[in-house]
Image (tube, rainbow, N blue to C red; front, top):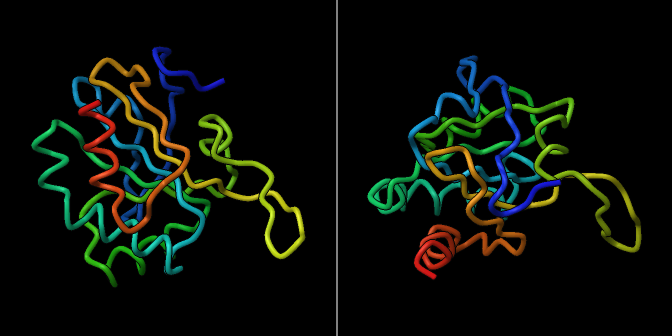
Length: 152
């Protein structure tokens, strides 16, 4: 169970460039680990572009950014290229990372219930400890939401 103040679950996966990305890569750094449902959808694009546009502000606060969805590496590559996303997008087709972080579960849309990716962001400190969990993501102003969360 993901909890503030507890160690973040280790993860490992490949990004849009085929590079291996893991929690260990961010030892000594703070991390914005954000989970999103699908590449190139309106909400996910707004969120990714907001993080891209505010990456310098997040880095100034000491944070690196990594996105995770169950889309393929090829889908992530097209998404990253189309929107000039400068951070890793990890492919998790098995949903192993999503499940470890509580970002996989029941969703309701149009009266139907199905399993899917739950939009959420986890802030991890330089020691690999969960600092904050944002469950209600503001896709259009997510960077400001993160910075406000850090400040409070």
